[in-house]
Length: 298
Image 1 (cartoon, rainbow, N blue to C red):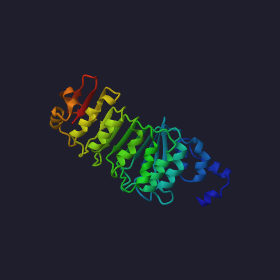
Image 2 (image 1 turned 90 degrees about the vertical axis):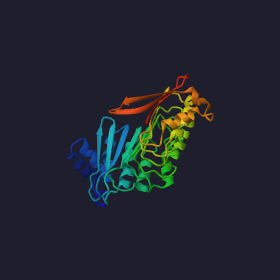
Image 3 (image 1 turned 60 degrees about the horizontal axis):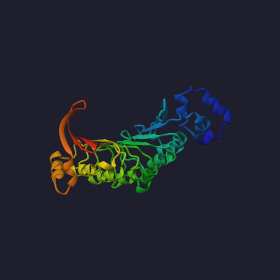
Image 4 (image 1 turned 135 degrees about the vertical axis):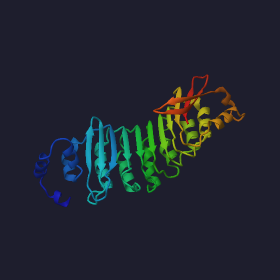
């Protein structure tokens, strides 16, 4: 980087001219700030960014790939770059029009650092995000005030937290600002997704259409009770819920619906069925005379 700072602009331009247009020049922008400054205007103006970590430390495989309106930013973990520096430098230049941000962390093999999480979230702080997706991300090393940056995205319509390690309270803090606009929520294999989460969604998410809580063992029939009682607050006629491999029990739900503690329970009709989702999946269809319905895959 120091050597590059001393090169005249003409020589930098000459070096870049030797590279092919497209992916080679885009990836060259990640190698040093001089290259980035020279070709930052050619970085893709994507509406969707997927961030990935290169698999092994010590090997620089940073790249930017663009296809249509989607950009894939592969961040290396080599000592000369560092994922934090790369994210904080490149993301603000690419994220102006981004509506979808995803992070796939399965290859990193360790916890996401607090500095990398801050660079990722802060780098997209000015973006009009409507979709946020994290897959196989371990957030346990990320500080609460860094995670609070998620709340700055206050118009999210889709949130996906798939097989992530989540700190206590992250879900509710992250979703609070976007509850009025939230349409789809997926949280899988998490001990922090609970009946309290579903109760919050029932009270504060009027646009909700889809929920997936597969593998969340702290979710029970009480979640459905809350969603049934809050059905008239939702705008959509149908709410679809995936509850495979949870503590949900349809028999327990029906007992709750017949209880005097749930006066509206008897207004709902229950139909058992099997739906083909590539394989036969048991399902429960709950319908209300007021035109609302909930389809539960269990």
